[in-house]
Image 1 (cartoon, one colour):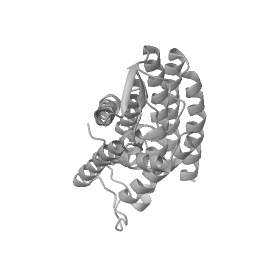
Image 2: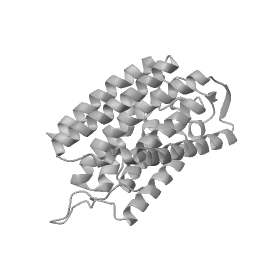
Image 3: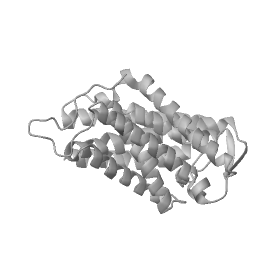
Length: 279
């Protein structure tokens, strides 16, 4: 019952607000307000439903960790994606002109709503519940595959793009949560990564046509393994390499700090580690 209610609720929230936010992002003010409001509503729903169904406080979204963990995540996401774009540019696969400040604001709102809703669904619900029953590694693999696969519904999606997204984003965000036991780091990373794509470099995000533009108006070209093709830079081999390595590093750090859940917990062991989020 818990799994069914949580998954159904956040699939509905994610799908409904995604369309609304894309429409609102046509204007920078409505885009920003709509995205922030979506994030707030989704977080409120998560804390209330988890509290009712699991009889606990949702410490993974504790307000005390918001600024520090989300800030680190945003910096990590922007930094890693900027490195991806630097490598694509060095290979002649990226060219850009100036975009608009209005696009930056609208994209910030749009990506705030998307990052929050998707991380609550895929890491807060799917990964976390799977981890309790199957252990960390299986939960990483399954949640990442589902995350990548669901992006196949995007207009310019490709199978390779979905696989790339599962590796670079699915594994890394799961690693962020496994290491800190806080959803703020993966939410921040997801926001920073997506915002850098559209809000800074002006490129396609995950094969979607619903982006709002940004500081630059970018064009990618060349072989798919370099530029990412129609799916966008996330399908570049550089993104897979950088995101995949960063995700593995997160998981290694989580394992060393005793934050892994074993695949078959011994009798008397807790299903998940009762560890406070790192500061």
